[in-house]
Amino acid sequence: MQTLHTTSLQVRDNQLWILDQQALPQQKNWLDASSVEALVSHIHALRVRGAPLIGLSASLLLALLAENGLPKNQLTQALEILRAARPTAVNLMNNLDRMKQALLQENFVDALSAEALRLVEEDKALCDSIAQAGSERVAPGSRILTHCNTGGLATAGVGTAIGVIALAFQQGKVEQVWVDETRPLLQGGRLTAWELTELGIPNRLICDSMAAALIAQKQVDAIWVGADRIAANGDVANKIGTYSLAVLARYHHIPFYVAAPHTTLDPHCPNGSAIPIEQRAASEVTGVSGSFGQLQWAPENAQVWNPAFDVTPAELISGWVLDSGVVTPEEVAAGYFQPR
Image 1 (cartoon, rainbow, N blue to C red):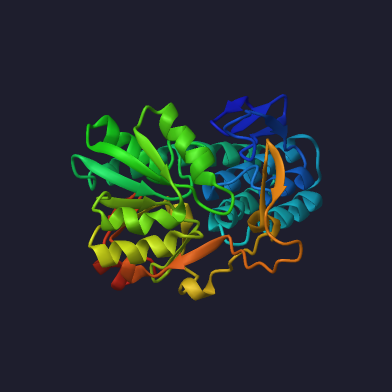
Image 2 (spheres, rainbow, N blue to C red):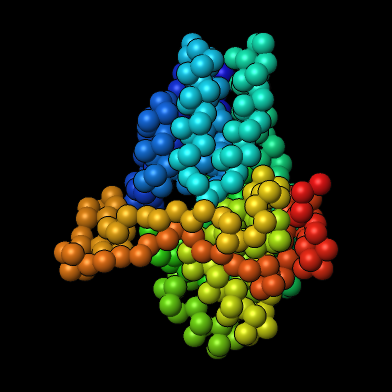
C-alpha cells in the first residue's frame, strides 16, 4: 500500500501506525498498530479514538493484513473482531461493511487496499463538506461551546464540529471557543484545547460542571458537538456529557448543532434507546492516568458507573450538519433518517 499520513494515522513500510492520543499533548508518540490485537487494544484504551478514525484505522489494517499474505478466512475473522472493538461508534461497522464487500471480490487483496484508501479520501472530502455546510450556520462574533474532540485527531480530514469552527474562524465569524474538559478522559482539555491552539483559534478551557453557569451568564451563543451514532429518529449518541449540554441549550434558547458524516448514520437503529452504550473502567473515574503517571483519589473500593456515551433526544437538536448539508428538525420528523 502507498505511504499515507494523516494527523493521527500513518501507513509506512506496509505497517499501520497510530498517534497515541492518550499521551497528547505532552508527548507525540507513534505506536505500531499492525496486528488485530494491537489495534483493538489501542481502541479500548482510546489511544486511537474518534468514530471516523476508528473505522478508517480498522479498514487500513485489514488491507495491510491482506497485502502481507493473511488468507481470506483469517481476514474474515479479523474483520469481525475489529467490528466488536467499539460497539457504540457506527462508523466502524459501516466502514467494515464496505471492506467485507471488497473481501468477497476475486482479487480481494487489491480490492481491500483500494477500498481502504477510498474511505480515507472520502472522509477528507466529507469533513470539508461538513465544514462548508456548518459554517453557514455560524453567526458573526460567535462564542461557541464544544465538547470532547472532533478535529483532525478524530478524522482523516479537518474534523467535524471543529472543522466547522475552524472554517467559520477563517471567515472571521468566531470570537472564542469554550472547551469542555470532557470527563472522564479529558479529551477536551488534552486534545481540543491543543488542536484549537495549533489552529490559532482563541479558546478557554472549562470544567464540564461549569457549562451551566457560563451559559446562564450569556457567554455562549451556540453549542457544536460531533456524534458516534445517529439513530433513524435523529437521536444522537455522543461522548458522555453531551445530553446535559443539549438540555442547557434548550432552556437558555441557544442553538445546539450536531456535525457528523453520513457514515455516522444508522437508519436501522430505531432510536437512542437501541444504541449500545459502552461501559468504561472504574479507574477512569476513581483517579487519573496519562503520560505523567497514575494517581487515585477515590476510596480503594469505590463503586463506579462510567458510561462512555449518552444519548441526546432528537427534539433537543437544532440541526444535523452532514456532508450533504444541514438536516432540519422538520425533515427528521418527516423520516429523513429512516431506511430507504
